[in-house]
Image (cartoon, rainbow over all chains, first blue to last red; front, side, top):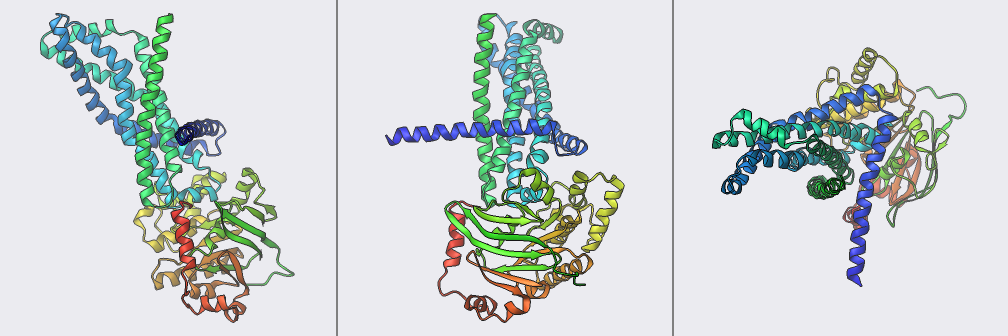
Length: 265
Length: 270
């Protein structure tokens, strides 16, 4: 019986956690429109966050997705070469990067860079009483801290995803040209023929949702920080772990939905 | 300071104020009034509940029972909107300063002005400069809080608390963790503010010398109860054993207070 109770308790906590995320998101959307924060300050903070979240992540996202593009092309070439189907390397790379790996790898890089930073920032502010200070100045911490982060993520994650698609394809192209199976021009044409707009848009939609989830988890973990510096470390760790888990879960759900929708069409 | 004609109006009034963290009651039914223009110092040992009292008075903690009226509004029943209206009339200088780390000192002080007033940016800039001058930090607008020393951070926090020209000013441990010279400087600053504005001030501290210097009235809290309350001189001469023990710095034979304090943290309650 204890086992059942444990499972029930864990389930209840998980549902409550996700409920908390939804609540934070809902409150942020409401505050975005009826924000007590002045527009100028909100925009300024959102731009500041967008620089940190998006522009700051550009070099590492570029590097990683480029290499992943090369790796996918290499792995694909193993099998496809035996079948004499090297022409398919371009479409393999294009589809796997745009539909799946581009957004996912971007999300994981952003979790490591920004999700953890959100939790650490808000957690530190909890410990140093800065959150209390905001409250006593009649400033809502969610409006002041969380809304700009959601805004920044909602704009930057799709941008980063598109950029990572581009870099991944470029990685595949470099291999394709180097292996002698393609010229640059023929690789581009093969990629264009393999892709439909739907592939790219599903990736962008996923990236947007990932961005919102990463923000919600990072901020919620930050607010949940207890007393003391070591608590900030704990929040940061769980922000990263929970974000990765949720991103993969959501990716799975999305992929199933897209698959079913495709079958119906 | 000129005494106001007639009895001064009561600005803060607490009745049967009880605060609980989980199952543990920290404040056991406090009752007191604070009138306009006076400086009340709340003293007490570590874990006595004096910081909790301060947090409750500014609305950061919800009491489990009782009433607290601030400027005539019962903050235990006030809506968020009403609470925000009261918060604009009070200033709180936190123990560690609690300046927003991502903003400069100047931006910290400007923050409530930018948000709650329609003043022009140039006017706000001038006001920030005036507030910084008042606390002796002229020219530090562009420093980040991390670049300031502990004493300067507290001064900057005072400047931010003063930004909205509050009617009530709260100080949490203004001289804790400072060397004697800097602490004396902070006391002088509070006395200056007291003279310059006829503000109501509530100071929470465990520094006796500082308390006797700045207070009009003293409230001594011990284990969540008020054990002495009255004009500074009266408290100084009190014969109450706990008051004497506190004022004469006699150690407890048992460490109940510390154990309680420790338990508060190990139970994971802030």
